[in-house]
Image (cartoon, rainbow, N blue to C red; front, side, top):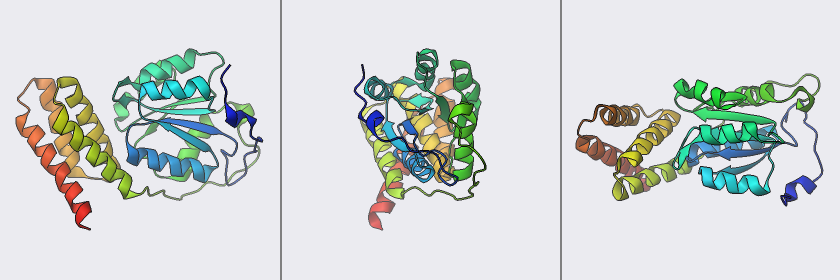
Amino acid sequence: MANDLESLLPTQMPTRDRPLLGSTVLVVEDSRFASEALRLLCLRSGARIRRADTLEHARKHLRVFRPNVVIIDLGLPDGSGAELIEELSKASPRTDVILGMSGDTGTENLALDAGADGFIAKPIANLGEFQQIVLSAMPKTAQPKGMRSVSDEVIRPDLLALQDDFVHIADLMTLNHDEDMLDYIAQFLASIARSAGDTELIDAATSLAGHRKQGAPLGSDIARITGLVQKRIDQKRAI
């Protein structure tokens, strides 16, 4: 039997302003910036949160921890989040809420077909929207009773987390140029660029992904991304 110490904590009931009070959330997300946004959204909603950045780490968490909600990014460094969604959707007992998440809205059906109860399109920053997505996927018996407030608060994660993502990409660009890793770099960079509203990086990531599919030479794409990422790292260091 799993040794889940959090199950021994007193159960807290949801409130009007904190509708996820008493819930535990596992976020499976490789981006520090996206994870920080979700951490703030969960805490403002009253939920406790843990994070895993790979499928392997998520499975280790799940062997000792039974969350009420699991939010799974579809593009992870060691595989597709749809694999874990399918595993959890077929498990017994089943997790109350399983949500897929991606910056590519075209992957929503992939998450739902794998068994997800809903989908979060990144970036997400509106507290009320986040709460509505989670609550609408909950079983009726687990939903807060009565009226609740709907917040328009916008969560702004610490930009230091975005810098961590840029450093991560810079390390990958330096160490590994194999084809699978380039696919991962393109989707990861596109995701954090959308979260940051960085159109120049979105264009660079889209170009790399497109040339990969076409089998075109990638040298100029790699050089461009390397330069853009390093520029953003240097700009932050200069502040």
